[in-house]
Image (cartoon, rainbow, N blue to C red; front, side):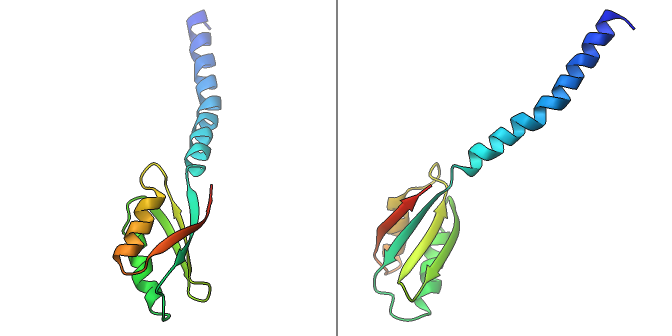
Length: 107
């Protein structure tokens, strides 16, 4: 076996070992990019209101999930802060006829 062949095999082995580690680091970084906010929703008077609010929030680019709780009059929204922000979520809810205020923001 020549020295060139040894180096080639060693290089290939290192690539096979480190590529999954590098990829895992990127996945974790992207996963941490999600923020969650709980919004207090005003004017929610019936259980059907939640469908209008949910649709309005889901139409905001970057929103990944929306959970509406009629009993507590809140919406929990998971979103990518690189694509949208809290003000866009509040605007979407308000434009649908349901003004909102932020209660809790967490990552």
